[in-house]
Length: 246
Length: 344
Image (cartoon, each protein chain N blue to C red):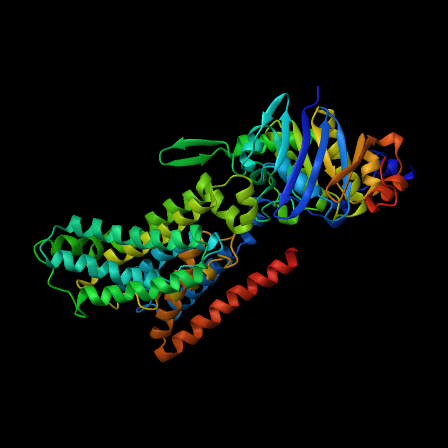
């Protein structure tokens, strides 16, 4: 049973058709590569799934239940987490503080809520352990490498027991060694049965971790197939339009 | 697919971690303390006090001078511990001096009209809350720049103070005047009440900043407001509350100072906002947001007062004070910048 089904999703911004009749299914524990040129509609699709805005028409079904998200918080409650391109981390806070930002473990003594730092540190340490990341809960994000930052952003999605994680260009701005680290992180999420949508321009990364690839061109889905039946050359052709359909 | 192995091969085979090479280590508590600006300002403060005690053992190191100095920086310090919450969010509050003025006048008028001291205190605090609320709503919800909003409030509140007081000094405080004056003018254990109020507020707000979710959210907003919003931090509400806190500490300072001086003038607090901001910055608060604390704010305020007092005692023309204070502000920020560069 798919964890997420998109049925005939369209989105118009005034006269501009950003998406037209996009169907997409996502199985648990599956990594789907979502590819397309700039302006192909990747970001729009992700924002619809993440609840930033509703589709103009079409249906979003999460585990057999039709969903109508109006705010990102609603999508998050339903189990959809987003790792943003700029990671949305606070540089001046520790790794643990970032993971628990907005959902701190706290003891309420009216009118204040006192942080229970030890519980948060322990939990953060356990999450990093699961990800086999060398990130330490007390370290400031400012002092971290790109790979470690990704580990923090990804740990945040694990905290909430997410069903689906949307990752927007997680390997765009980091070193080669860190890319390998991030791809490992993605595999660990997958091992936990989490479905992942990986948006990326980097063909090697998509072919390294994805089970399937979907290609958008000018707001339409032009291909969706298992990664083993495709090739970087074919995907490149699909993205640019040299190959019309696959 | 030649690239498939890119991520698959790496994790074990005895590879050397980047961290091992460049030596990014977890900071110990001791390293954190000595890398903080507040620590070095404390050292400077102790140094100046030690030097002046040696040079002027009778005048500077006297009980009377200690009482004076602690009282003189206390009301700036009180405002600074409120201001620091705003600065942590990346904002600024230029209106605190004028809020002090209007609060003083409100208290004076009520006392003059024979109301009880507690009515005057409550009305004074309410003045702070209302002005802070207006600042906060305009900044957080209407999205206006903190600098512009509080600059407007600075002008507005001062004008209201002048209008309400009919541009006269209020000193005839009625039957409850004596009780009101004790609050700000009294002393305990050899130190002024104003100083004790500073200690209580600094500890209270310090605990709130470091150990509560509200404090954590202030730092998060200052660090990356967009990230805070995305993760569900109630950014607008927290920001509004920060401006209320800042204005509230300004009105607390006003109530204490009016009690101490025994009169309310509409010029009370004029240009204090700059001394308050200077104190927080010298104490390590970052005007870009995300950094700062109440300990630093208090030490910063103390340092400014000790410098002022020392120049006076050494017989240096008082017109030089501003120059010294200015140098210290820039020096503090410059040192922070240099240390920051070494860290990065």
